[in-house]
Amino acid sequence: MNREIELNGDRKVGSIFLNKSFMLLFLGKLVSQLGDVIYNMAIGWYILTITQSAVQMSFYMAFGTIIYVVMSPFGGVIADRYNRKNLMVWMDIIRGISVAIIGILMFFKIESILLLYLSSFILSICGAIFVPASNSLVPSIVEEEHLTKANSLTSSVNSLSNIFGLVAGGALYALLGIKFIFIFNAVSYILSGISEMFIEYKNKINIDKREEKHFIRELLDTFKFIKNQRPVFIVMMAATLINFILVPVFAVYLPYIFNQIAKTSALEYSYVGAAESVGFLLGAAIISSIPQRDKINGYLKIGMIVYCLLIFVAYLVVNSFIKGYIVSKVLVTIFVITALLLGVFSSIMNIPFGVFIQRRIPNELLGRVSAMLNTLSMAAMPLGMLFGGALADIITMNLLLLATSIVLAGLTISLFFIKEVNSI
Image (cartoon, rainbow, N blue to C red; front, side, top):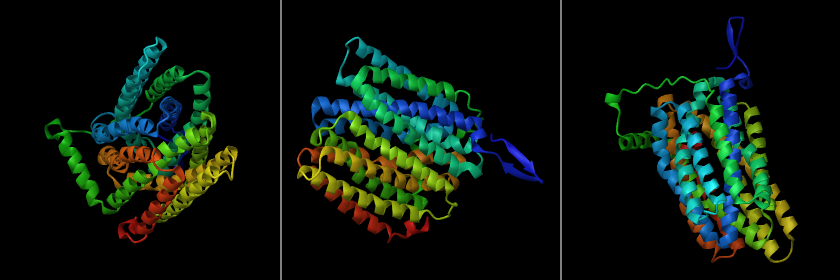
């Protein structure tokens, strides 16, 4: 694990950057998610461009999310039954081979929207296994003292890949087209899988096959366990509502604003996502430097207040653009700044809660609990995408953003009066 130093009889834990297994996990996920970001950005823009419909784009995105949400609890059970490192390697290899085959077919002019749905189906199932396996692997390969820093670094993988991936995705899509995006993503998965093969990890989970429960029974038991952890359960229910409210903003409204209202390029649209990722990195650096606290409810409440204010700013910007008060460059600039702040406070909210879960849940249950929590928080996302896509085609965007900020403000106020939230 980490290099350790004995000093006056006391154990001193070395730097997390000397932990070879963690750095292999970090670099593998970074390469893999870089390909994912480029792929997802290009696919969403491609569908919106050829259909000019927010409904069509939201339906495609909801499809993959539904598959992921349904399979994620099963992925958590699998992560707790089998060797987590091997699961990660195989999921990356399968994803790489599958995406490569579809990309090659497109080079031979075998192109169909069904290929995109097939790709989404495979990636979602593999991701539903990979995510709980990788999340629950972290406490097994790093020291307890490094959990906060390890989670900050792991969370920064998304930010680093978004910073480069979104901008690269816009440029690669314009220069090379969707076919090369498939190939690039396939290579990133293969490289990630190879990196993960060298992680030093011994599977310490022993399951007596005679006592092994049915998957469904285990899922029900996991849900009951989470429900009995009242603060965790209440926050996850709040997260489900928040996702339902916010996912249309980022998955549907934002690309629609740039593609159909402001008429910008894919590259300009990518700047906003990259700015959010830079903000997330800054937030991760901030939260890892703050002395650890037992209670995290303060982070959650501050983050929610900022969310409300930023969505309201988005409403003002779009309303001003529609009325001709500002030009597209000003709109892009303000959205970039808004996204930067959003990323900072998203990180400040999410990372402490992740550490809280890893410390509170026993290691033998961590994979399935992590997957179940992820499923509960994501359950409303596909509905939010479809609902937001339908609304975007019939209601003006400025009114949608104003309504979103008002609803989010109401939810934020309610958090101050829920005792379970105040206790965490």
